[in-house]
Amino acid sequence: MTLLSRLFGVRPAIRHPVRVQRDIVIPAADGAPLLAIRHYPADVDRPPLVLLRSPYGRGNALDQLPRLLAERGYQVLYQSLRGTAGSGGRFDGFTIDPADADGTLTWLRAQPWFGGVLATWGASYLGLVQWELAARHVPEWKIALIQDAPSAFAEHFMYPGGAFALGNALGWVQLVDTMFSGNFSVPRQLLATFTAGRRLRRATLTLPLEQADRALTGHRVSWFQEWISNGRGQAYWARMDHRANTERMPPRVHLQGGWYDFFLPGMLADHARLLAAGREVRLLVGPWGHGRGLYTREGLQDALAALDAAMNGHAAPTGVRVYVTGANRWRDLPGWPPAHQPTSWYLHPGGRLSRDDPAPGASPSRYRYDPGDPTPTVGGTAVSRSAGPKDNRAIEARADVLTFTTAPLAEDVEVIGPVRVRLHARSSLPDVDYFARLCEVSPRGRSLNVCDGIVRLNGPGGIRAVDIELWPLAHRFVRGHRLRLQISSGAHPRYGRNPGTGQPSATGRELRASEHEIFHDLSHPSALWLPLTPGAS
Image (cartoon, rainbow, N blue to C red; front, side, top):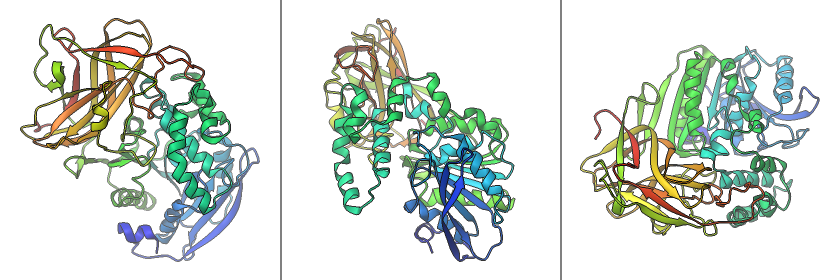
């Protein structure tokens, strides 16, 4: 019996004996050989099939899932994408070659053990390939189980708010380079783990940025070079945008995300698109970072229930289920976002945040941002295990970070839905970033991040209205605690520092400091808007 079955209480009523067929060769449509492994129940004839397609190799932690599913009566085909783990062809970052899916479907339909019923499952890249699979009509496809993977890759991973997500991009480069190194010995893996953080930090400070991949891995990475040379909205990213495939997704889709996952906003947008396309959709959002929900009791049990129902033609839970952080409990919602009242919390001089209207003639708050000493960030939506809520007090003590804090709350305040900030700001340079982070401060002063967002501006100066979309949330701020809003012009290394010069990110070498004023008077009411839920204060 698998470790997952024991840990998460998902033991099948009937446990089937499992057989494994290794080193299966599947020809892609262009002839590239794709390697796969099949787990199947030995006592079931042509059982339903679950397809997993991955760039991350075989013989790793994901092998627990195929065995668990085979014990439950499913067969699982776990395939390595082109250019990975022995499969032929060239790996091209997040650009998925359609020949892989075309050849796999043709081959699969010819197998005597395929019963004509198909499900797909997977997190992150394993979810992205499911969106690409829908580029063609697949009548056998009954359900897609997608974790932490939106249909449009670039929108929130690569250039959220227009700022390049440097830390996450290089973190993934480092992960893939280690896996593709060809040496998986235990000593090498341990050494890579101990030195990874230091090497990544050094690479994020490299100038020009086009040298960062070499500083990290010792060689050029072609798809990283393409990432940094193609800004937000450029035609290059269309090859990773699968939103147009929504109409060909299977009848049922199970979406799972995390409050600290950088892909969450895109998945919530996909949820709305799938509903509009007439699909039955289940949305589960938990208190975790990228890729962590798959191996949790709630995440695994919910996904298995959806799979079992779809493959057996039974009804399964739909709707939305979210974990309310702060309250530390799950809540079922009729939809996303639920009914809410956007409420304004205004910035005031002296670092005060309150529901009171701003006063006329109030002086602005000021700070200086120096990209040579970039404002750091901790926690939040990072690729690494550092994601999630972290103590922000050391960052808030910096001179380049403004904080605006409420009085202790007289009662609980529960907010579920979208979050935004509008600043009235003036900078000494036209090319600047503004980063906003919402925190909860305990009576002892510990400041834990809840959600955040960034925007990059390029253009004329003067006092500008700056709108920042923060990550959505479901959170209860506890009575006696305080709300705190951070304002700064950087969050390094999560986002690449803005050099202040307007030069291209890839080739710029110069760094220029900037002065900033945040206005919060009656004529310039800078504010945080929170989605107050009915019955909350």
